[in-house]
Image 1 (tube, one colour):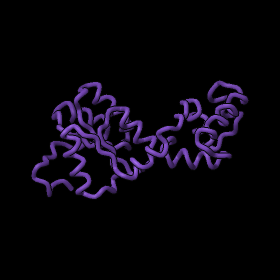
Image 2 (cartoon, rainbow, N blue to C red):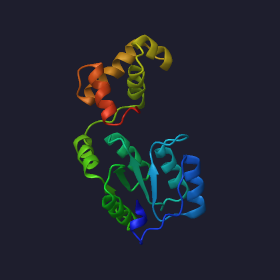
Image 3 (cartoon, rainbow, N blue to C red):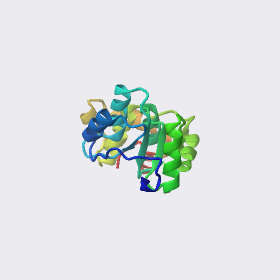
Image 4 (cartoon, rainbow, N blue to C red):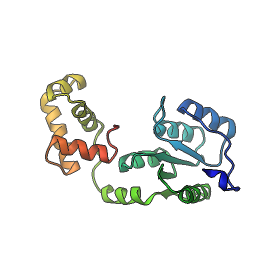
Length: 185
């Protein structure tokens, strides 16, 4: 896709997080495009590792999934950009140039979703664990056993998650959590 732009030179491609880390170390690219769905690591974890190696690294997260929680996690991990894989070639090129200059670039759809939810409380890791159990079809008792907590505590986490997601039931909670990228599908 980037061959039409002579000012961009592709130095390496990787199919796994392990390869991405090795190529980053070998080539030290000016800008790294990082897929969030890799077979061995989550792309956000690879972004964190690259930033741990070089705080000045410039990364753009790419994904097919438009959840604002994924975008926020990628940005907090150190990505300077977040684009959907459906982005136009010119949008990708513009993002690469902007990130190379040290600017952030987030696609409009994600930016709008982020702005909608920016003032909301984040779900705690335990609330996400409970929702993950729900998404697997596990009942409260099973979730409690898996997490080594009481059923009442599961209900408390669920109630808190419902309030934060502005929903009234389990189905709505799961739909919103998946839509926002709080749960991997």
